[in-house]
Amino acid sequence: MRDPVSLKIELPKIPDIELVAVEGLDRLARFAGISEEKIGEARILITEAVINALEHGGDESPNVSVEFTITPKEIVIYVRDYGRGFEPSGIADPEIEEKIRSKNKRGWGLKLMKSMSDDFHIESDRTGTRITIKKFLN
Amino acid sequence: MDLPFSLTSELRDSRLIIATSGYVNNIGGEAIATEFNRHFESGIKEVVINLAQSKVVNSIGMSFLLEIIEKLEDAGGRLVFSNLDPAVDKMLTIMGIFKFAGKASDVAEALKSFS
Image 1 (tube, one colour):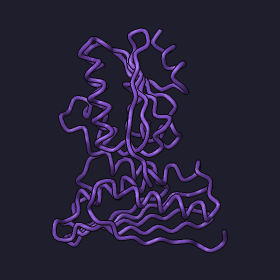
Image 2 (cartoon, helix red, strand yellow; image 1 turned 60 degrees about the vertical axis):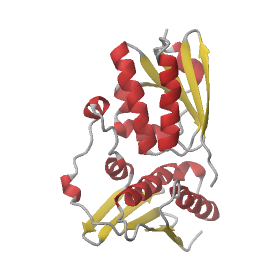
Image 3 (cartoon, chains in turn purple, red; image 1 turned 135 degrees about the vertical axis):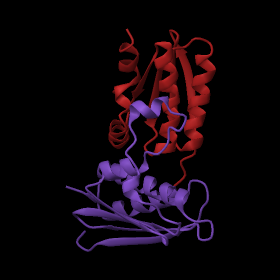
């Protein structure tokens, strides 16, 4: 594969809709000749980005936009919601020692996206949140 | 992508082995926790979760497994994950889960780790 391949999808808020994005990733990766092994982490990144966006998206525009591009070097994932936004720097990374003893054991999405990606960028304001993730393939 | 969740469980020498198939989301995670609780109430404290057939998981599903770890910690028991896809292995590592749970390449190795 020489030319980048891209997919843009608009996901409604219905259960397990993130799997549609995962399926799209799998198909593009197969077309691009990228091995299953190399896209495993990208699957988790897309899953986390979409469920995070669906959870924090607004009620008036609950859909989530997903776009990803595969090149021989990298997978670029862009996920956008239309919620009220939040201050990313105000979200502390969860710690396992605290989470195990906490009633709220959730809240791992941002930490996973930051840690599993090779480049992570988040912008958030009152019109929504935009997350861009890069995963290098080499 | 059709990845309906299902699980099977068996007891071997008072050790619980839960094997999953499909997407471990909130529903899958809750199903694992429910199956664990059923056996935990009967005194089972050593548990293997075999994720060989679950290549896609999410953090909400995994957060249900923290409940299992909490209960086993309090009871002096232990959880061991087996047959992890490399990406799932990395996810659990980032979450810090292996500070409180073990991992093994397969179920046999997991069971051996309890001895």
